[in-house]
Length: 279
Image 1 (tube, rainbow, N blue to C red):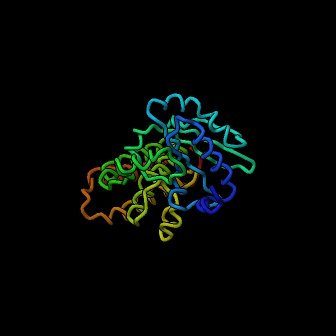
Image 2: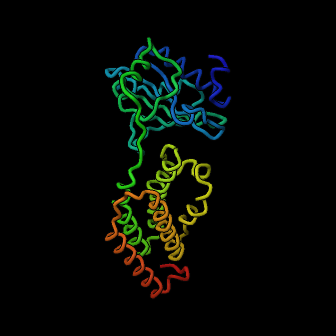
Image 3: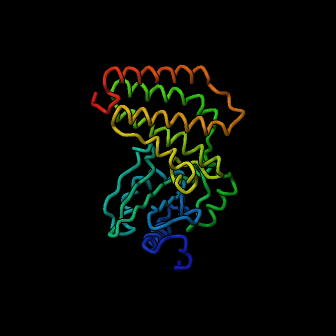
């Protein structure tokens, strides 16, 4: 593979790509090697990671997965690696190579798994056209966000954050709001503007006009900071929800939750916490 063929990857990643292709070709269990994420759409930069997908036959998957650390170690100076149970993906090996430090993810999948893939990856190498066959067999389907699904849940999530605020669990309250940014605001904004929903990734570029509104949901570890962030989250959601006129709004849940949040504010003020004091 020439440098011209690697135009999609920053130069520091080139040796790892070449080594991965060589490792895939040398292992008879491997049917193909691809890259996904930003590499698949030509959007990698110096801050990107490299998302390899190693495809094998179904029968060979357990063995290849067991040998994943050795596969990774053969690609270059491996600093550390661990499996992806924390993101519910045990087939994933997260690696750090270097120096300089370069993040590389290796996902080991069986041929049949590709029938349920989210995207069509960039094919780096394949054995006897195996990956072309999969692509023809079934289309990739990126997960989209359903605004009604979010509306059915949003006010329960807000209530949950309000209970944490009322108990003085400010870290937990802030985490609930961060969850809303990742699960609600980011996907709604990205999808409404023609981008793939992917948490809060690239929101600064996708929606510069909403940066201040999103930043207002961050808050701080005080009762007033959490309350302001929750109200900013509610305001932003109501603004975004207005773009979907066919939505069945859960007005009962909304009214009850907003009243509960107002009650929490009254309690915090009564207890002298609205000046930023500790619980």
